[in-house]
Length: 148
Ligand code: HEM
Image 1 (cartoon, helix red, strand yellow):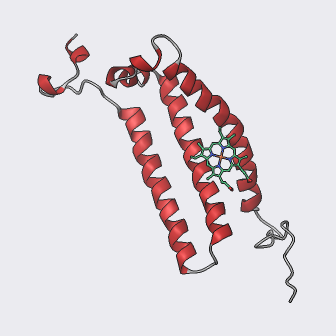
Image 2 (spheres, rainbow, N blue to C red; image 1 turned 180 degrees about the horizontal axis):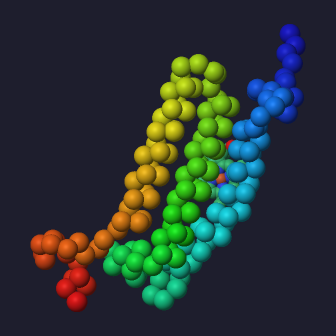
């Protein structure tokens, strides 16, 4: 018995004849975001783990101090958006590769989309609204540096 294996370059769905080719832009996004992520991820690790006292300095106050500066808010926001969309688009590729079109595939992709939207919304809100010393909170619930 013989069986024929399709060429790996055979597209699962042919590219649209006109309009935006989302698969092509997804492919480009994975490469472009990967390049930017190398800078963002290693910059993040270097500043958090190696500069100054290094890993020993990381605590609630360290995070509060970083997010008091717009530069680090935007750095972390970009890291969050690029990595989450990159990871989710990569998972979408895996779902396409390992499931057949149908209900299960739709549920898995829907779950991915919901997770991305929820995490991007919550993460962005946390980065830009983080308040380490909220006014009117009981003193015993606040970190020690808030009294100063
Ligand atoms: C250092 C930064 C990163 C670089 C340079 C990078 C690069 C890449 C590239 C080029 C691909 C496409 C591979 C292909 O199409 O065969 C890819 C796929 C993927 N990436 Fe990343 N990536 C990075 C960080 C991340 C992060 C932080 C996540 C998770 C949040 C992630 C999750 C994935 C997944 C799930 C895939 C799909 C794997 C597959 O198709 O087999 N990557 N990455």
